[in-house]
Length: 140
Image (cartoon, rainbow, N blue to C red; front, side, top):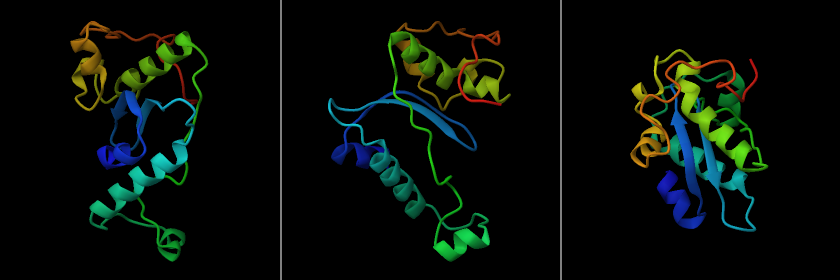
């Protein structure tokens, strides 16, 4: 779904982590293009159509013909500078540790972290012992 969307609505995936119940990503869009909404709509729609309808759905979702696999909204944020960019990329990669899914970032296979290690941007043991300063981003 992502590849198909990128054919018609190009963007570069700078960082990505897929978790059991959500995902985080940092995208770069073409100059002059800020249409995140359409890209997310197409990605969500493609996944929804490709999966069998086995999830539990609320009466409201059933009445609206909606699937129960995506939240209705997404959080959109415009990166301010290089430091902000680095913090958001780090946040994507630390997320599996933050949620207690693994003890080390390198143990989570569904992440662009491994691409960053291959390119020598991060060491393999990056954030093995995260501190509160390392875990930035979402509230709660």
